[in-house]
Length: 225
Ligand SMILES: [Zn+2]
Image 1 (cartoon, protein in one colour):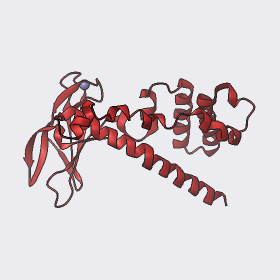
Image 2 (image 1 turned 180 degrees about the horizontal axis):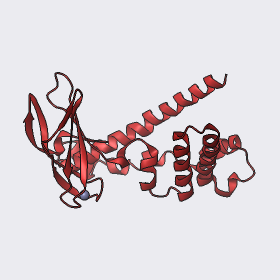
Image 3 (image 1 turned 30 degrees about the vertical axis):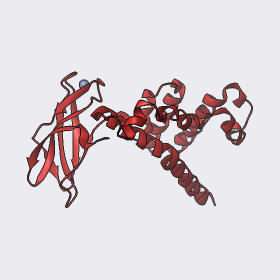
Image 4 (image 1 turned 180 degrees about the vertical axis):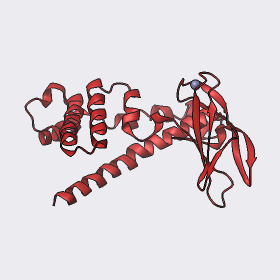
């Protein structure tokens, strides 16, 4: 699911006491064109909100939209179903450049075996995924080393700060983005959306993911003791 921010909603209609989006400018999850979706007003409604769909004007694919309504809030949360922006790596992994095919295959097998509740096979495939992740960064240096030895030398072979340092030039005081942030020039809808994406990515990378890895590691350690 990808959040649709109010800036991308180009028209509203009324549904009961709710103001719901009627048309939305967004990237089509299928063809990647920036299009204007006109949402069908034949909503499926539930306690938590509404579900509807819209056909992409460019590729004609039908795309689901979910509108979550909260009590007392007149502005609902709107989402487009975009598998690539879900937090589930198996749907994201193949669209990220530079991920080795072998790793993608190994991870997908691990996920599908896990779904069948075959714990032994899951363990085998989980090990293969870990080895593939390590091999991706260590290459031949992984040879002959145990998993813990490989993890120990891993930080020397990944540039974890690059995603952060590469943002420096983008924020340069004479740069276009900086001027927009300082309100010296105007941010259009697309730039607003990209900026929100960047905030989300940065928070995920710096806070959410490290925190989640830490929590999972603690749970595993607790379980082992
Ligand atoms: Zn499309």
